[in-house]
Image 1 (cartoon, one colour):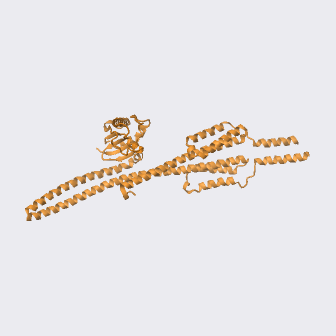
Image 2 (cartoon, chains in turn brown, yellow):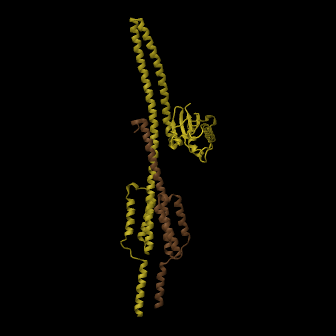
Length: 121
Length: 328
C-alpha cells in the first residue's frame, strides 16, 4: 500500500515539471531584441525594451537553475515585448512623419496666403 | 498510526493535484485585459484599422480565458494576450497615421495646383486690363478726332494740337495692343501650364521649384556633393531621376545648369567649384538621357544667394545647383 502511494505522489509531482527546453528558444528571443534595437526600440519604446531584456535575463537564469517550466514562458514574453517595441517604433516614426507633413503644409498654406491673399482659401 | 499516515498522504496528493488545475474564479487580471481589448475595439478613431492584429489579440484572449492548467501557464497566456492587444493598438494607430500622411500629401498637391491656377488667373486678369486699356484709348482717340474737327472749323492752331493728341492716342493704342497680345500669350502659356500641372504634381511634391523670368528653376539642395567636392555623391544620381523626368516633359526647352556656393571661402575657389559642380550635374543629366545639345552648364560662384549667408540654414540653401528650364 505505502510504496504505491509514494509512487503516486512522485507521478503527480513530475506531471507539473517540464523537460529541458531547446536552448534555441533563447536565441530566437535575442534575435527579436536585436531587431527591436535596430528598429529604434530604445528611443521609441524604452519600457517594452526593458521588459524584453529583463524577461530574457530571467529566462536565462531559469535555464541555469533548471526551472524549465518557466523558461519557455519567459522567453516568449520577452520576444513579444520586442515585437511590440518594433511596432511602437514604427508607429512613432509614422506619427513623426505625419506631424512634419502637417507642419510643412501649414507653412506652404501660409506662404500661399501671403502670395495670393484671400483668394487662396 | 499507519492509518493516519495514509490519510495524510491522501490529502497531500489531492492538494498537489488540485494545484495543477486551480478552479477558475473571478479573475481581476483577466478582467483588466478584457477591458483593454474592449476599449481598443470601441475607440471610434481606430475603428476598421489593424483588423488582422485585432483578430489575433481576440484569439489570444480567448485562449487565455479557456485555458485550464496551472496558474503559471494561464498568467503566461494572459500576458501574451495583453501584449497582442498592445501590438494591435500600435498597428491601428500606425495605419491611422499612414492614412493621414496620404491625405496630407494630396492636400499639398491640391494647394500647389490651386496656386498655379491662381497664377494663370492673374495672367488672364492682366490681359483683360490691357484689353480695357485699348478700348478706352480708342474712345479717347475718337473724342480727340471729334474735338479736332470742331477745332478745325474754329482755329487752325488748336487743330494742330488736336492732330498731335490723336497721334499720341494712336501710339498709346498700339502700345496697348501689343501689351494685350503679350498678355494673351501669357494667358495661353498659363493655360498650358495648368494643363501640365496635373501630370507634374507628382514631381512637384519632391522637387523644389521656382518660376522665374527665365523659366522654371529646379533647385537641387546641398545633398548632391560632399563639402568641397565636385563629384556627385553616391546616390546623387537617383535624386536626379525626378529632375530628368521633369526635364523630359518639356523636350523642346533648353536647359541651363547653374552651380552656386555660399560665401564662405575664397570667391575664386567658389567660382571654380560651382562650375565643376554644374558640369558634373550636366554630365549626369546627359548620361541619364537628356540630350547634350539642350543643356549648358555654368558656375555662378557665391554672387547669387537666395538666402542670407549670415546663418548656417541660409548658407545651406545657397549651396545649390539650379537646373533652369528656359522659356526660350
